View 1 (spheres, rainbow, N blue to C red):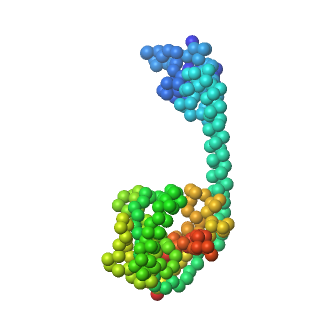
View 2 (cartoon, rainbow, N blue to C red):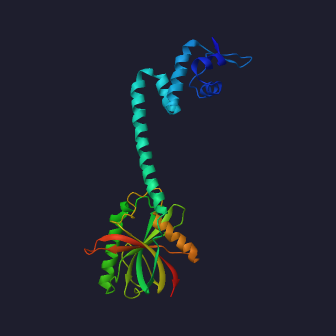
View 3 (cartoon, helix red, strand yellow):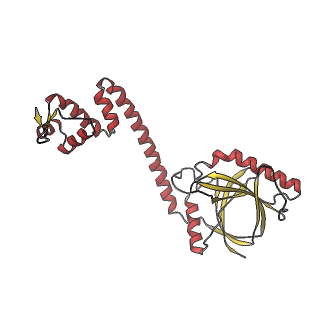
Length: 278
């Protein structure tokens, strides 16, 4: 039998590690003195200890180490699986590093924020309850488009068709993870108080003549989020938030305004906020 110190020297594991693996049930001593609590190991346990050491140095989690040392015949299969998982994780990390570097470099570009004078704008919007954050806005595009389509048809039927491009805004809901997405059309005149669309919760209002700050993101622009990290907001949006803070606006309604191309299909968005009414 070997003392814990002798076993540590033979296996290359520290005494602290041996105690830890004992607690985890991964490498229990062959015997424990009932009076002193001293651990004793056998020479036949050194192979298991060395396997544990090698597998841990590979970065393998304890659960996977236990699988291999308890079933050595599956070592090749389990190590191959671990290696595939590790390569996939390295590829993910490499992509995250490349994307993160592109994003951080974009932080150093000149601010994309512009200002403009905007006229008074009446609007009608349909309110949808959503889960926040919107992890993938594109996943709901078909539903959003259907709501926009129903609303615009109802406005046309009433003789108050849209006079410009749609816009959306998000606001908090009743819980930390719920929110409301408002899908809006600008219209020529205030909507009638009794205007309704079956199945839709509608709101209406008027944006005053105003000074707006905005950033423009077109889908074919090198500044659009392609290549920008999904883990962070677009740098242009961060520029806009800083501009809002500098202006002293305390309660900003941030709108995403569609930009149509010559064929009527969206080519990008303006992210806009009112700085001051005129």
